Length: 200
Image 1 (cartoon, helix red, strand yellow):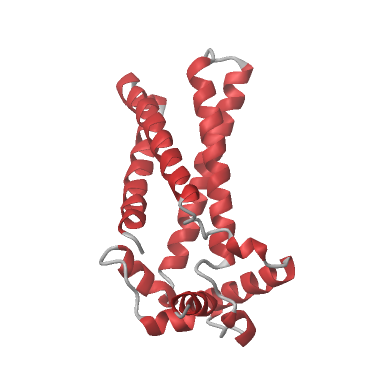
Image 2: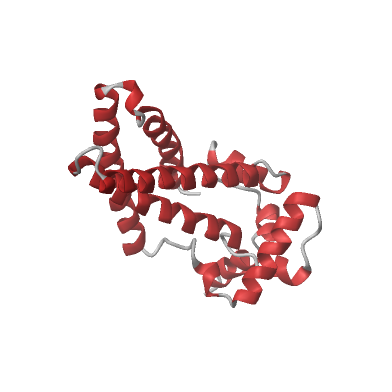
């Protein structure tokens, strides 16, 4: 894991917590003003970072979507079985594991949708008159985005506390490295792809 990847993850956790805490009108105008200003700042920074990732071809999170849906479904079913009951991965599924598994991809699509809802709803609320029907509709969008983010975090926590993924969790808060044996076992296709690039 690169340093910027780990920093963005850690910063995102703190930032989203601050936005969640300060988003209620019950805390008063100063907190709400901070929520709006900080939310806009976070959105701009996130947009710039994502643009850099796309330009430098570092976005691999959605590569799993290139597989046929039957393959995606089989991988998702196998991962859920492993997480819920410890069922071993089928050999063909295990050999196909890339840098990110399909559940991480699906969860990230939900996160992207949450950012769209948050942005559209939040920006609209700034310019609309409070109490109008459209304002309330935009507020529902914004709250819906918050709900999706909470769901994403719950799924994320559920995944990273699984014993299979603990090396990833340790890597996130240390030097960003996982044991090579773990990579061979859990990211087989990704490992083979990297080896083929290095051998050229």
